[in-house]
Image: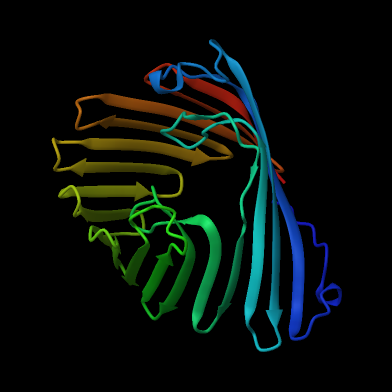
Amino acid sequence: MKKILLASAASFAFAGAAAADITFSGSANVGFGELNDDSTGGALNGATGAQMYQNISLTTTMSGETDTGLAFGASITFRNGDDIDLDAGDLDYDGDLSTASFGNVFISGDWGKLTFDRNGLDNLWNDDFSHDIQYDYSFDAFSFSLTYDIDGSGDSEEWSAKISYALDAFDASLATDDSGEFDITLGYQITSEIKVSLTNESDTGENTLKGVYDDGTFNASLAISDTDSEWDLGLGYTANGIAIAANYGDQDTGDESWDLSASYDLGGGLTVKAMTNESDAYYVGLAMSF
């Protein structure tokens, strides 16, 4: 990602500022694809057959630091266009990316970090809900985060919290909110390539055991849930700019799903990407970063 420095401390001549700058970064995606999903009407842009997608994003990041070492900053992203979700396992279509978020503003010091982003911060336990303020603090092997929804927004989940602990090969985390529900995850790094974890979800009573192998070139993961024998298997390979990933799952509804994705990094911020899944949905396109 290229960054362009537009201003320095000399341009921000307010009291107490020791350094400040503004940078720009951007991305763009273009390609074609077809969805065969009843929830989307089986089409892109409301039309049948292969359709084109295109989007452009521009992010502005501002940062500074006072003479006493207090850091502060803000960022905002402008997006325009439409998109097929490029995340593995998800071929959803978003037909309107022509938005600008409220952006986020932060201030941090030895006491921790405060981030302000109106309706832009995920509930730490259930990301179906959004909050306005987040506080983060780390000490020794512990880290703590708390979010709060100032205006309420009609949601019952007004706050959420997460505490994590990591020491040597062991890690643990607890996430909850004011619904009273919680997730607990325990993990252990057996070797540098192999890790196992166990997650309990209080709202469903579901326990999920997951094993991951990753040597930097090959990776594999297997997650097994005690809810109706639900499981997911993932395999991947990454080397010389080529990345291939395959996922297969058997859900508690009895439905089987799979997806296959591939990408090739051409260097300089340009990548060719493609993906398909069990419904014969697909996309092929270019991803650019600047």
